[in-house]
Image 1 (cartoon, rainbow, N blue to C red):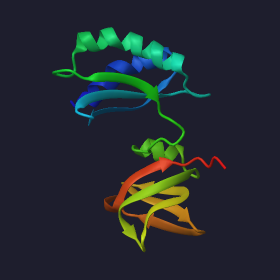
Image 2 (image 1 turned 90 degrees about the horizontal axis):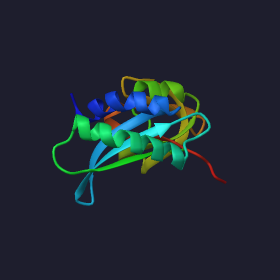
Image 3 (image 1 turned 90 degrees about the vertical axis):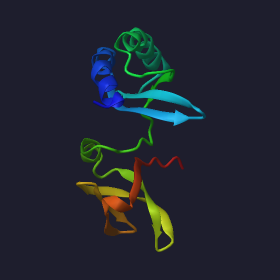
Image 4 (image 1 turned 120 degrees about the horizontal axis):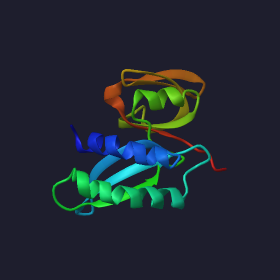
Length: 151
């Protein structure tokens, strides 16, 4: 089982006990150190107290479960307004939402598409862009994230 899956499994009860849900767990190398990051969400939004409470409760569990050899930094943070969509359930929950699709390689000179999510099928992403439905094959899509217009 991957580190992120193990952490998700033992973090879920703690997160839910605090009125939140897990959006994602990532284990990445940043600036020469490893970071284990737990992204949380809740109706009405996550605040710093939510992150702090979950972090404090997770510390002894991480010590006991010891999912990672060596040192790492642990963070609990909000999934954010412009969160990435990764799992099929993420895409299903946000059908009709404003998103940005980033591609590995530009299409007609464009690499980032501000659009509306219309469908998801096995990694293929269908969006409405400039009034037309376009489907990007999974192999072309680097990232899909929610888009918030702050203007």
